[in-house]
Length: 519
Image (cartoon, rainbow, N blue to C red; front, side, top):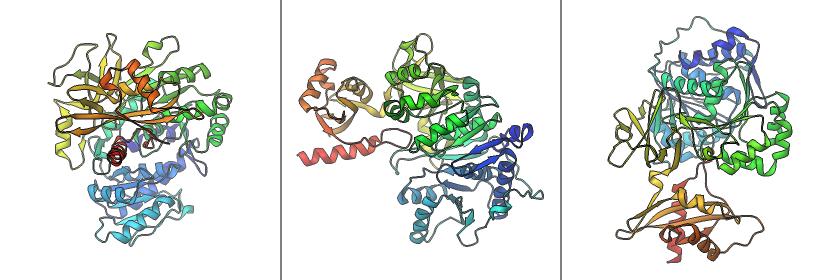
């Protein structure tokens, strides 16, 4: 099977069933399929070369998914880009992947127009607006909305292999440190199979997806529903929670994936409203960051009828482990589960030796879900691969029953004059302080001979007084002396990606500036 063939079940079994909806549109499987064909044939007639890259830079919508499938069906490589990406990042990504075209939303079109004004030697050959369904670049094509359902049967479809690269997803982080993760049809389908096997998607399932489709978490949940002939309601984030809750209730949604950050907001401010509208939910899936045990308990107590599942995976090694949480077994609330089907997980020491159960080291993954390579970066690919295993950069251990527990990132290890700790260890302690809303510790270089120093960023709870002396005193009660941060800074928000991951690079830049100002 190939990626663009996953809608065949819905088209074959019930072509008039709604496949996708968003706040403005809905598409049946029949219209969805024919629209994909029109888009794909227009791309083929552009006479692009097989394997050329096309950016998908738009907000969540049903037409985002149309463009996604069309690019793939035309034998091209889709490059999903964060819908909030700035001009500098867009310029870098177009140059890095040599994009020949871009599908944009109306907000993103402004950035692309600015890019075209500044960049005279661009590789782009067309720009296509998903909102207006028209092109606006020299020699670009146009698509009239009332022709959406027509089929053109005389197009010669390209011959596509399951080993062909179909998608490049750039990792989050600083623009310069971002890497293009190349995924094949086989990689993505293996991930979908793992999700479907654990979650148990059915043709009757309907999922409300608010996650960005430019990331594998949200995108793959939509693909999972389509693969079994189900349906999905697509939203852009949780800004319009009333509309989302109404969609869950009115469409009798069975699934609702999300990040810990999203569920934290829902549980803190709208728990009862959520409960009143969530009677149809069969499961909730959480990913992108560790799910705090206390939050997991709140969700399970509020919605005792649902399955609460967590999975572990990176863009480079999707859906490596799964766990279904239980209120009766709180000892596993810290775990990200056991290895997914056909996935190997091992923990190695610094010398590359496999460690025994319970021993802490770097987590490695071996599976069909592991990326093909990094785009144009052989050195980074080589550094991450070890005899077929992918080095995740995550620290953790596997317990005697095979459950994986994560304990931070290798790059988050902090070396204080030869003594080591991790951001995760410090954060977990301070997050138990009742006056603290959010807390994040980082290490910054103090000098060649001194190693690093620990800097902490704190968001205190509303209407609560909190002093640095209190923070120091709390740390000294529960941490070794060298693990207590040397500086604390109160801030209004901790910079995060749109999937909830802390942008440590930005925090380090802020810390260096603040520390310099104090000198």
